[in-house]
Length: 420
Image (cartoon, rainbow, N blue to C red):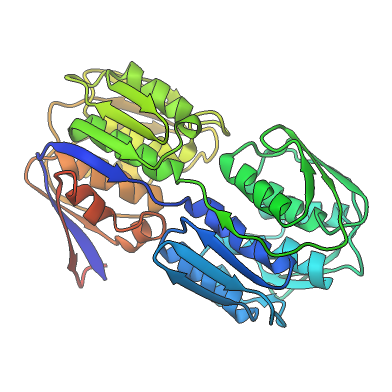
């Protein structure tokens, strides 16, 4: 068990390089199940979630290695079609193997993700999508069992735009007979990246990045190498860190087009931005101005930046309102920020934030991935020492963040801890 020890008050300045996108990696890896062979995926981040997906792929018979930022996947010997609870419970994205397995092999047995039930939960969108493609679905002792001699194209219209369900259905549809139309499809860059990878493998897909994706099924696919996109949430986290504690911070190897909503809000908050090809340079505001945000599906303000934005607004010169319209209960970081001196009140899915003159270091506890990021950001500007416990949450989605922040001036150390 580890914790971060942060001595606040150091100004950040310099360049930080963004890693490959976690959420894209978690979709690209299962896509390799659709055709036997060897794949090379560059710009792959070294993260706990990527490691968990690698272990899941290995239980299916694939061989997965990561050398530097290049991941090699060999799916030639895949013979097992069951994704066990022990791995799926660690990461909801494990359900991504459902579509590829039933499309290629006609059978998949995938544990329900931890905390899910058979009912009106997001996992239902995946299940209903498979059924629309002709799969027979049953529930057996906590597992989704899907069977299909051959999937058939169909028309699917999601009640709620879902990144995971869009990706899963798209992967299943590429080997289905006929045409599949996915309505209210997710627009996120990670879905576009997955679609482009599938197209390189030989899939016929139109409408990526629009609400309607059309897939014309093909009889077979073939392996192809691919370069992963940059992680827009990691880039956004570093930009908010710069706005909070910066002089001038250059966030390199990012895709500014994927950050439009956040960049607009940062400018409203007083930051000065230089936007170029694969970089954003931010000069911190002299005073952080209060700015309201409401999360929305891409290209709106991302829910995965909500916690970090609240940390920024906690040091603003006034009051702001932060509404999360994606996950109504995603505010577990708020009590911990209050321990650092923040003035925040949550009512239903809305946080009311009053900026304070200073935050003060304290011991705080991470509860999830993005909550962890908000606590680290707050610790960067808190007076004295902040200890952030349970940093394994952060390791799921941020690659060596203490090294990257240290490289631009933060005083942050990872130390062993017996505290949980």
